[in-house]
Length: 215
Image (cartoon, rainbow, N blue to C red; front, side, top):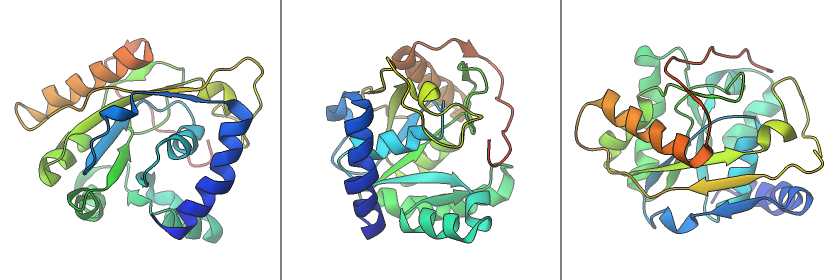
């Protein structure tokens, strides 16, 4: 586990657990070896609570803009062991795959938000196929998860988390899915269906509009 990650978990992670009393269910579904954690995306706070509640290092796919933007932000995401990904897709995504595959084959965890961006309205949008493609390339399963309540803690237009009174933060993990067979599209839709069952969100069969950096 990277030093910056350990320090962040011991400080910010502890503050999150104390301040919001988040609940986590189904941690036993995460296998001891490599796996992709694939979930819905409501808020920037999703990564924070996921990192605070999973007792292992989780490498996140982070927007490449974070690495190219503010110097301090770039240093932070690198120190946390994040993996840059170009949201535009195409051949640029191969760089993220090249960085994630060794992590997974080495027994690590990589978190992916298949929607590709935060939900603009709280609904669950169609998943992009990168998570399934990565799982097949690395030979690992996908563990679906769902977060609820984080959109009240840090809405899209908020720069800082809020102590939302009465908000319950929950992270639920489902059984690991073997996505080695079938079409990539069908496997991705299956993963999104599992995420929807865990989150209870309304499903939208189209891609979510990409949000600008800073939103």
